[in-house]
Image (cartoon, rainbow, N blue to C red; front, top):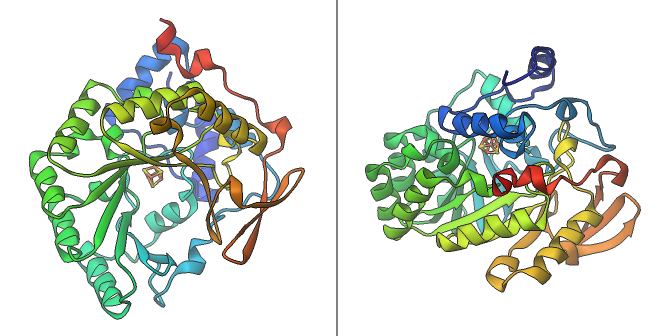
Length: 356
Ligand code: SF4
């Protein structure tokens, strides 16, 4: 059985009452999850990525919020909730609220579920034209980030409308389509991305997400000259060990994917089971740093906050579970997950296939 029926019911109740995203897994990814279950049972790294565990719905940490980065406070246009701006030179558009699968750890769970349930759906064409008008009045902006949801889920015609409409800007797409639905990168779509010089930022969290099919698509994308990057979260039960990170980053390096950042998960509601205590984050960072070549360990560990992205170097004060980060003259308090709630994952489970 994929999921215990009692747990499924409890989870569905949260979907109804707490704006948690419903379970959604693509057939492509489900095959890998089933293979994992066959070998190690439920609760392995790919399982936890898309299916709830008991811990996921019961573990709570102090000071959790629904939207830690307060996306609602960064909406520059009155009445438009899908365009966000935190920095002068770039803007983010949530081009869609649809994903190929729902990640259990998604930090945007609340806003995404809210968008999915909202009745006021804008067409992609409208969204692009509202953004273009905003860009025409804000000349400092040179970069557009298309996010979501998954921008690759909007279909070729919509993607073409968005990319061609934004061709005068540095445009990057954040996507997990490569691991959930690699077939979406058709020849036609690859040509479109190439033609518009779009940067692709993959969110790949675990080395077992890169199977032969995924590898072949990445190689095709790379061969076509599209710039490929990666960023992903550090997630308990999925990749919270420097050996896993080394394997993942090395594999992506072989495939010519340039790593940007590893995100420390936000303290969001129902996110505690994925969080890693900050002392352990530092330990993982150091272990990675001292055991790998620079093309692996140069990846930045960052945290997204209301004052922008911060790193270890931005820590101003650290008192127990309260850490104060400072940046650009501003400060933000972060409440860490208590050590007692954080149990390091077992490497034999994280990398079960290596031990077969
Ligand atoms: S693909 Fe991205 S936006 Fe969609 S559920 Fe996963 S993390 Fe969230």
